[in-house]
Image 1 (cartoon, rainbow, N blue to C red):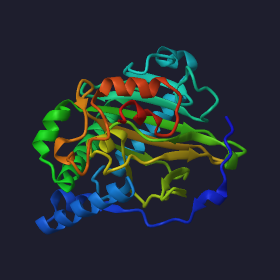
Image 2 (image 1 turned 180 degrees about the vertical axis):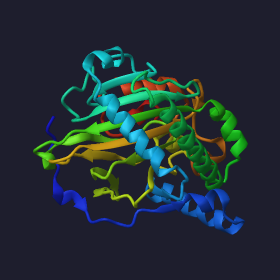
Image 3 (image 1 turned 45 degrees about the vertical axis):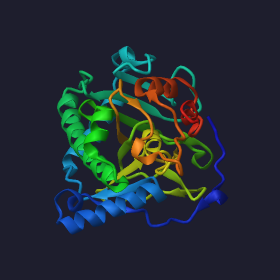
Length: 318
């Protein structure tokens, strides 16, 4: 459970890139062009950025956090049907990274729920279905709009990518992480260093800090702006861009006094989509560095094994 964190390896805060979603989706052509360029630079240099003016109501975000908190507070008997299942079961509740293999390595509780293309929900708390359905629709719309701009920044045709990845049936999972207080918070991880599967991940958290990202080979704390959503690029954006955009390593550290909670939305290709580098980005000067693989197979392999930073990418690395 304990993993030593050397604070000497942490760098001072840099200014995290910020994307104004309002300008991206409803701005003038020049404003949108500026945001597309800023997004491309953020994906290439950071793999991480903050999104402001995203349009998700504050009340909805707070209700989503509270609904997950109530879910975690249910009795063990009420949660038992969702504990210890297969990694592709649509609803799972557990601890660590994978409850079957990693108990004790990550000091967290999680709930993972598939919400697209087929929507799933737990029966309790009673308001969970309506809140999670509305929240998932909002985050999916933001994620797909960001991806549209990302394709534009890469100079590739949106319709071709959308068809290849079957994005009308995009896989979307809603995840809540609860990191309880831990006395030795300076030496224990809530979540070990890792990258995410999928294309983009959107994160909203309570007012307790704990997220760190790896930037320029050093770890740095992330302090989100008020009302912002944090977004990071996933493994499959690295694959599709043929390595131009890297998925970012991140980890969670603990607070010694209060619990941290985050709600995460991960958006990827359809489960049966076969992903590989976009042909437009492969040429003699930039040969393919990843092989083709079905998204379902990648997801199952990554989620069924121990968490080792970006080790899952070795499944498809040439």
